[in-house]
Amino acid sequence: MTSNTSSIATAAVRQSAAAPYFRLMDLPGELINLVYRHALASGFTAILCTSHHVYSEAFQILYKSAFLRIYYEGPIGGNARQIAATPVSTDIITLIQNIDICVDINLHAIGPDYVFHKMLASFRGANAPFRQICILKLKGLNPATGFDEVCTVLRAMSGLVNFQRVCVTAIAGKFDIHLRSYDVDDGRYYLLTRARNTPFYKLAREKLEATFGPSIWHDGMKEAGRYLEFRPLEYQKSLRG
Image (cartoon, rainbow, N blue to C red; front, side, top):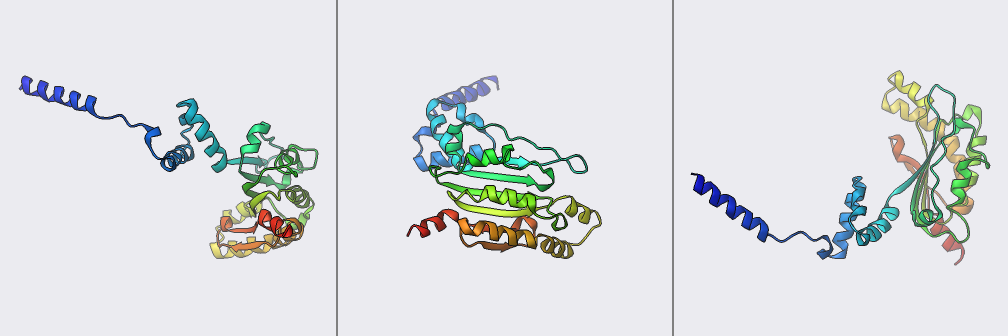
């Protein structure tokens, strides 16, 4: 019994030693890029530390597919405060293709002198590279209090003409959470929030279509599916003939 077990173990070791190693770099380039995308999307950034070669290739994919998130939000029920974005180097900003912006309108800290405008200024300009997607999510909208802060944000956004797509949407604020606490059904919630946000979308069209071109309205039942879509890069190219 002992002899048979020993023979089986020896054979397994020999078979393992003879098996070829998996070499990532032996794969076709398309498959290697697919591995990078899946690894980075799942949060496995350790792949960047594999080698200098892997780092240089995966690094490019990381900044072409990932989103830089710029969030300015205040605590619900507390005093609004500005949350400054982490400084990003100029070299990295040049590579970033997608940005996701969320602004709490109740902050009252989004004027030209604040980090929000300075960060956006890094992504626009005559020599800015072409980019893919910019998502703007405005939180805490309330037509009763006016749209002065919204206008400030939209003016800052209007210079981002080097993006292929710009999506503008309103997301849940304290008003929406209050509705949900009373178990408002989905149909009623949709009608209430849609009516509340209609003036905002009208304003966004007025402020952005001059530089972004005609907008496309997506009218989903869920909040995430309700937004204005612009295609500024395509529109600017059409103006140049």
